[in-house]
Length: 149
Image 1 (cartoon, rainbow, N blue to C red):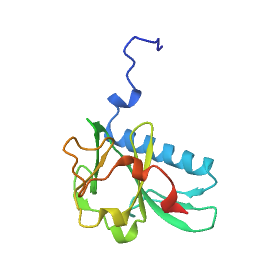
Image 2 (tube, rainbow, N blue to C red):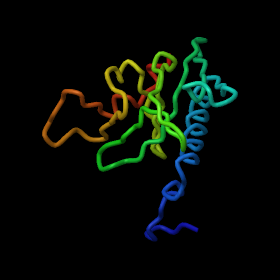
Image 3 (cartoon, helix red, strand yellow):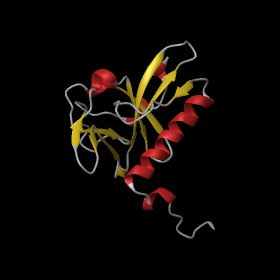
């Protein structure tokens, strides 16, 4: 039971990576359905996307869902598929958008924004203290569904 002021911890703090990924997929699917998008899940694990969504304008998009844990003002997103036995770079030609979920917010990152990256993508929840602009991706720029219209 949660009572205000008693140091509430979100349940995902103690989840394993697989459970966090499942939770993220469900959160993304629920959000899309609630906004008029149809959602389909591929059968099996042999595709580089987690779901396909059809927009209200009947366009299909392949969505790779990623859980991202906050590290200060950064959300780090792995761009590699990792399991117990392998690690491989995702085939961006078979993905249209990454849905990045941090337990409360979904960010929609089109694969074009990831050009030249292979292992890690960072979203900033605050601008850098040194005012750097180049190669900085502010999370607020990816908070809308504009890339799925």
